[in-house]
Image (cartoon, rainbow, N blue to C red; front, side, top):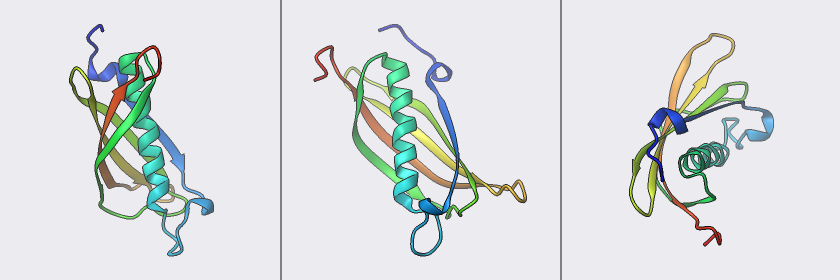
Length: 121
């Protein structure tokens, strides 16, 4: 596989949080954020390997602050480390209040992915 720089595979996803993303407390449900984190990380891994990839583990996810309905959430994912059999992707999650323009770091995650072979195994 040809060596790549971090910037060649990094990804940023932005999504406005809507009422269907809420938990019973009215904040964004953590599972919705985890789904976006996993999607962004998978794109980073696929861009890096040019193959199908799978999530091997979510090594850590730290919820720092809540996100609210109406916030624009940014998922910023990039490659941290690559070995022969796996890769670690680091993710920073931020929320922007569209009324004030204030950005808040709301979470960080580390995920491990593996690339599948031509037979998808």
